Image (cartoon, rainbow, N blue to C red; front, side, top):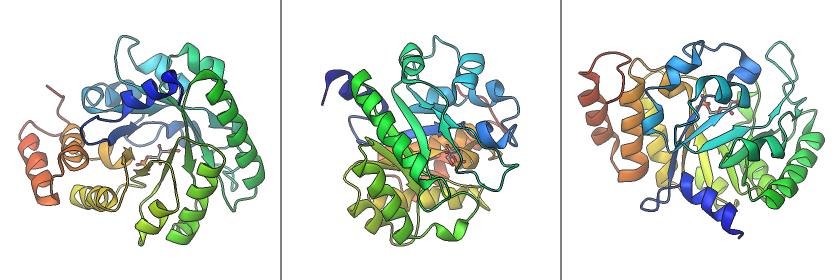
Length: 270
Ligand code: 5RP
């Protein structure tokens, strides 16, 4: 692997655990001002020191993230549909690899829509993005989007989507945790990170999801709503770090969470 590509990957993954805690704040590109991400700058600022990488669009990066911050950036480069349309799969590449290089990002990310109306286009776009990423030394993360059809999130579907993404050359894949997750991991020859999905009933449920995903072979998380829609986002991120990097049990992670909570709801980081 090229030095630049290796260096970018190394900056996102801890040398100790070989895992990554990515903070996802790229929801607005199709969901608009999502709950607790309306003022992205204020939401992101206290979380930045605790993230191994930030998944973001160029608009929010330029306007809401200080250029002096050392956090590695995973730049979302696909878009073109919003929640007002039934078919979210009608995406194209909306940010060039040249722009990604100019923004000094550690990786670019795009959604692939396996089984959706625009499956073909999204997969061809992935192949093209990988070509460009290889040339520029920038890793590509494929995101296995499942759209509104949540019932598709089973191991058979996700194993297919992840494997196809890896076959087309993506260097990382972001997917969802599911029953039989080891089947998804087994069939995917590149590192997987898991999204959290919509806010779960409790912080504990999100910690449990992360624990299971890591135990079953994920190399980290790329989580959003279960962090910044929590009443205790910084505490939640620290608890997730304990799981992903320090092999903490859910109970130990809950102790981290409860310890941080005394600092107050939506407390700023120290
Ligand atoms: C938005 C995304 C998100 O980054 C991904 O879904 C992770 O966020 P969450 O944990 O909230 O699901 O790809 O398009």
